[in-house]
Every structure is written in C-alpha cells, then in structure tokens.
Amino acid sequence: MRNSSAKRLFNRFLRVKLPRQSGGDSHVKTVATPRSARSAGLFLALGLLCLGAAPGPVHAEGEATNPAVRERMALMKDIGRNLKSIADMVQQKVPFDSHAAQAAAGTIATDAGRIHTLFRPQESDPASEALPAIWEKWDDFVAHADKLASAAQAIDATSAETLAAGFRPMAGTCKSCHDNYRMDD
Image 1 (cartoon, one colour):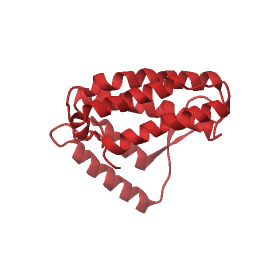
Image 2: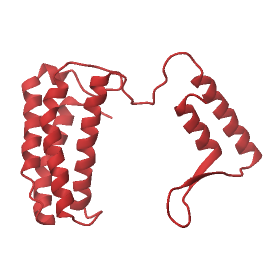
Image 3: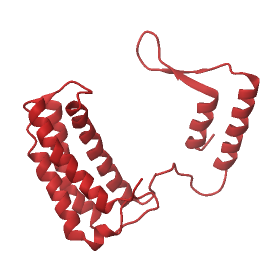
Image 4: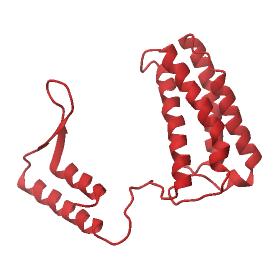
C-alpha cells in the first residue's frame, strides 16, 4: 500500500493498537471480528485503496500543500499547544509547574514575534483558515501579534494565581485575533 492515509484507515478497520502489559511501546494485533463487520470493514478498506490509487496527490483533510501556509499553521499549532499547557495548569487539569509554565509562555512570546514575518507574504491554500482581512487590516493584525507577545512575556509563573492572572489577557488576545482574522470552525 503506497498511500499512507489509506493504509492507516485500512489498519483502523481491521486492527487495533493495544498497550503492552509490561510498559513500553504498543503493538498492533489483528482482532477477531464478526464476519459481517469484517466484510464491511474490508469493503470500506478496498474502496479506500481504490481512492488511493487515483492519480494526483492525496492529502489529509486540513493539510496545506503551500509550504508558506504549512509553516504558518505549524507556528499557530505550536502557540496553541503551549497555550493549552498553561490553560491546563490554570484549570487545574494538571499540577502547577512554574518552570513548564514559564517555558510555554516564553515559546508563545517567541512564536508571536514571528507571526508578522510568516504572514507578510499573502499566501493562500484551501486548508488555510486565514481570512483576507489579515492583509486588508495589516497594522491591526500585527498589533494583535505584538499584544500576544507582550502578554506572554508578562506572564508571572511564580504561583498558580499569578499564572491565572496573566493567562486571561493572553488568551483574550488570541480569541480577539481569531474572531477577526480566522474562519469560523
């Protein structure tokens, strides 16, 4: 199977990943299923294989083909991951960790400083959620990025309370920018 997307879907219907009992990596095991379920899964997998054999590139949904847009999307995902790690501490989903929170805020500040550079070229891609308003209101967009960088730099991660206080304006800046410059989901 040359197409990795089709292969993953095929494996999803006919196999499952099981964790090893003694720790370590998981392994794949074929699972016995009722004949009707196997037939349906096999039929679907064969259909997906036929689609994978179609000419032209096959991309996962939401995967950009434009390298500039891919880089922008990777930057935004990095900001999102770091924002989530702080949010999880603020919401007490994970224990407060001053060093991890400060590192996440530092990464957000650095990434926010790169936003205007990566968005300056008006690149597009069907997978992009960036609205044309970014380039129409460039100065406001850059101001949002600068505000995010400043809010991230101002994070005080000495306690859970100070982290929460700094998190609110930082998250609010992200939301405000997304409300104005990102397509709705």
